[in-house]
Image 1 (cartoon, rainbow over the protein chains, first blue to last red):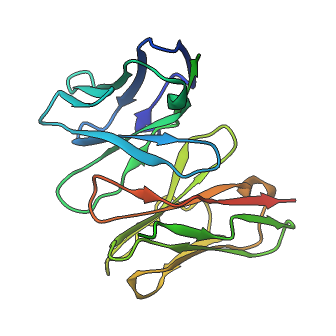
Image 2 (cartoon, rainbow over the protein chains, first blue to last red):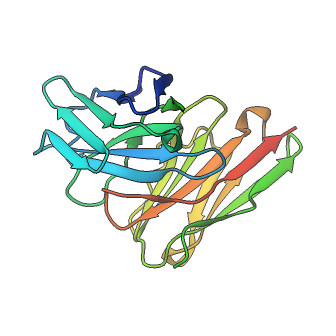
Length: 113
Length: 112
């Protein structure tokens, strides 16, 4: 049972344009969401997060949007750069202490120069 | 500052052999996670340790898999009687809270 889903396995975007990565979740109890970025042969690194009390969180070129009613979140990267080419994982957890984090299957982003 | 380290970085073994994978978390991190990523797949949760609490083993795929965390620090993931489908990158992560995990570089396991 995949509780966090990233339905697009890959995405190609021209440099300078916006990249939009999508994520859906099924467990309405999740109230904390994260995005991780992974380069080949490296472990994932934390990128940005959002709590369910917000609907938007911005950090430089990266913005995460949360739509709780739709159980959907998205990561926007603008402008996209070739160095953004990586696999992006969406993750979700319950807050309030130490909780297991559930990851999606990832979306491979390619930014074309 | 040292990050999460894992050893070995690569392991090639024969089907049926046992393997041990090691994870050294960041000092002071009470939470430790093991994941695996098979070719073309996402991050599959295996097991989660949190302080002195009983570990969450709900992701272990079979009883051939086990993990220990000694002294609240170093963890070892053991796979007995390895099978070809066990071939994957095994990732360890540690953290202090639910909102961020620091990953190691992973161990690439190949079962021939």
